[in-house]
Image (cartoon, rainbow, N blue to C red; front, side, top):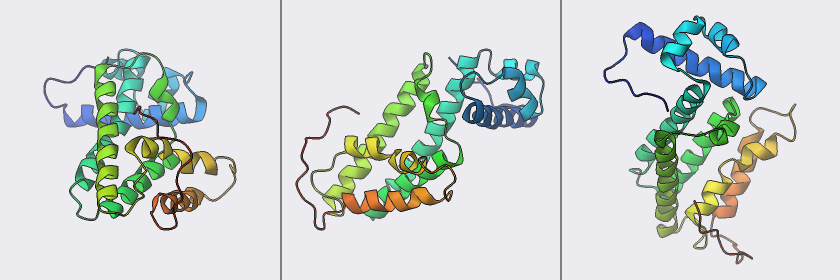
Length: 201
């Protein structure tokens, strides 16, 4: 489990940590979970010793990357919960989630190895935020009454999954499928869904 610093990092140490997180995310996205620690350090422009001072194990590094990704989404979601127009808030959140994944797909890291309580808590908070965004949109009548937070959690990665079938397609192709998904969430012309929503997530 990644250790939380007891005091703020010095500016240079903070820059090194951010560089390592970005480099590691890129290496994992390009080469998978077996990406070399030495290559990560080299890509970040630091020595392996610096990497291990920040992240003693690869699992610590993976947890930090996942926490960084989840933390960014949670921060955006908390802000969007205060937006009066719940439909706009939900669409912006789904757009942000899809855009971040399109930039660097590290979703496979979320299920690698043992994750610390910080990751579990951040994931739980993300699901809570999505449920509240969906509840607010449903209450305002901008999405269909039979859509649940669990449905939307499961749909979050769908635009990117579809676009991945055309690896040489436009990098913005996911936006087309997000628009189709969001139109499917709207109440206009909706037909009853053939199966109940899952009670997980």
